[in-house]
Image (cartoon, rainbow, N blue to C red; front, side):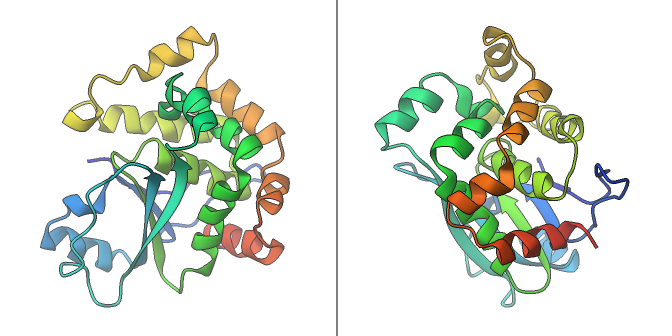
Length: 223
């Protein structure tokens, strides 16, 4: 219900991101056999399922996955971490871009794990996915688009597309996303600009990503 190719987005240097390289999505466990066929036909060969330590999400049925498509779990959050719960879960920030600068500042190793997984994926497209394709996927999408030099306003527009796509998704109901931003007297664009100001590449390197991995991840979106 919430899936799109991250190609065709403008970059700060006047270019555009490549299609067929990175797709963001809600949980691929929802896919029918025809859905997996469509994913494969789009060129996807790696599916990253972004997960939270201490919680469970439905996982794809590996019997339904095409044999040349790899599925890898990457734990980007830790619900058992008391500090993470206090700063991101209890505040509701996890459901908004407010979480993104927090992750870069305090848990850069988890951000780095996502980018490293994108970089080491073999040839073919990569899917970034979570439960409803907005929150953990939003974080991962922000990281790869930041490496591609996509402006904050464009990243915010892409994030907002998820709010529209999930309007009829039962799993997304009851989450006051925009209300959290209003309560904090900010906007998605302002928060993303603050996250970019931290220096995404610097934070990822501090989290353990290698320079070559950052170059490879960026090259997936920039020819």
